[in-house]
Image (cartoon, rainbow, N blue to C red):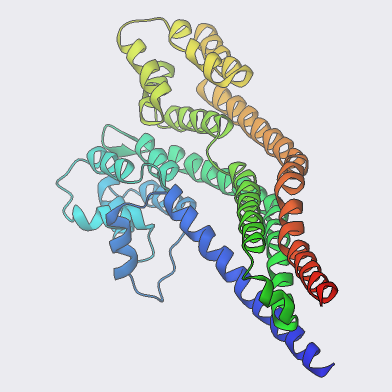
Length: 374
């Protein structure tokens, strides 16, 4: 009895210690593959001191706005804040490359946005670039950029908390059959002998394949909520337009700045440069984003035709984008338990039967046939 209790405690301890580490390692590999970190950012992380904590992009924008308001030159203020060790890694690496202020600030910010493409700092560098017009950073645009960045981080945190239960469920359900099989191998000699059978090995391989498929399926469903989606792209379009308006751009030139956002923005900017009307140029928004894109294009065209003040337009668009993002996040989180039922029913439960139960059944049948023959 004591031997069985010892093996049971040892098995539970090993499964409890190794399973989270294995899944955390897999999560890190998937995250690094999804977000491609530039070489300059990696070098910065290795050279920075361990004691310097990196400030958030929103705080960096706020500090930069205060410096510009105090009368400091925009280029000098940017290089001064970016050269600090606690600055965001993407701007710190750019500040190290362009030590002198002889380069145009817009060119420096363009290079930073190009380096941050596809990373977590893409929105941050985009809003910095749009806050600069004619080589000058506008404090109102920087303050709005900080507010937009905080909204995006708040939405990401909400989605992360909402999907944490799905990640934990996936880890527990896929680790349990392996722990049961390991415990059975420790306490049952007949089960260990049954591994020499071809049928048992085939059953285990099929069960492990279903188990891995179920975990990948559940993990993909949970992470797909927080990855880039048309709603996140729509929010970025709206925030970029409002930041450009606060930087002094007109409605048409603010729409032209969408060329930095996505291929849809490049197409709209090209149509505006070719002389198309604003209503015709913004038509792809409705085709790409659906009803939110149609409302965005309608609001912009009506504000241009009626001469609505820029501040009123930006306030309305920001409110619509935030409410649309919150509703979409809540809708996706409510759909998640229903979506998780498919991998659980078709992969996890069959894998549990094949890994945790079938080897014991086959070992029992083998021993029973042997004893009957004897």
